[in-house]
Image (tube, rainbow, N blue to C red; front, side):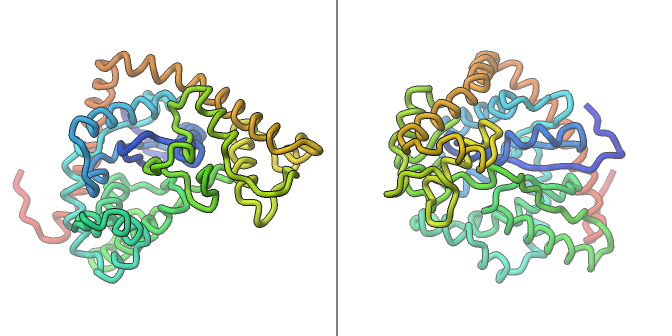
Length: 335
């Protein structure tokens, strides 16, 4: 494949660490399809980020393959979109080290994800967890990405990427493109079904709090029936109704209905009817995806071919940026 020169570049990635949830799907992957005609899109399985917490090697390899299949099953076109695995392109680690040297300690210490993950992994607060934003900046800047589709919780990482890029550009002249965040209007953030003030997380130990993309229909409906709501009975989007607001957002994402339309649809009906409807809409919405996912996972040779093709072209693009950076900072290069 080869990108059109007149299109801006989009870059984003997903860690292969745990089963992806409808939060990942509705908040990110599903919305990426709308971008592939207008932009040159690069989507990466970021396995290097995953090892900031301990991983089982066999599980990591399996989940890397599964994550690629999820990208493809979501309807993204491999003829238009560049897919690859982060560790297959060494330039990510190489540029990350350079950017570490242009990233301030204070900037990294203010990152909320470092604080959150440190609290959850107190026995493994490693340097990689601390410098994670420099690697994420390298992911983005290597490809001159103009747009980065990320969740609200990742917005801070795009902001620090801009800060690092601006600092480097001020010292060495125009080198990096400054990226902007792309946030969809719906599905911005999907919350836990058990604690609807917390983001739905694939690492949540309570399986009833999370809908994974590969949950079967009965499990999906059962989990929505158990979803935490409130003591009222009216289905309406309002402050203080976190559980219902979350379910309405999910229902809106799968049906395309507005909040006002949902309120009218369930006027006079109880939460039981609404929860069942949300579960059925979610299960119906995921069914075509799950069918395609199973087909892809049965064809490992095809998935490996996509990876090899993607890493070759990604490596070509990344090497041009890395060479430019090395030249500007004074590294001796030989041909």
